[in-house]
Picture 1 (cartoon, rainbow, N blue to C red):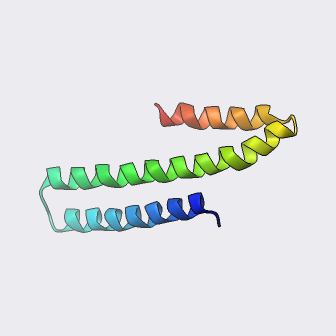
Picture 2: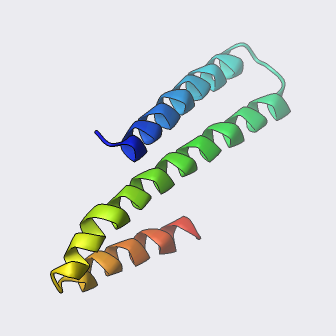
Length: 87
């Protein structure tokens, strides 16, 4: 596993802990604004993890496909993901 994937796994594990904490906060009937802030923090970590995975994909799979003259499909995949990301 390369460094970018390791970073993504770390971010995902951290977000998992935050999500578990959010569930406990809800079960403990904690203040709603505090819960909402924790959800936003977890969402931010998930987005960062996603960007790390996409960065790795672009630097490896997409780059290799372009070198082989077969990059159109990979580029379309990235554009599709970006379209979802920005909606």
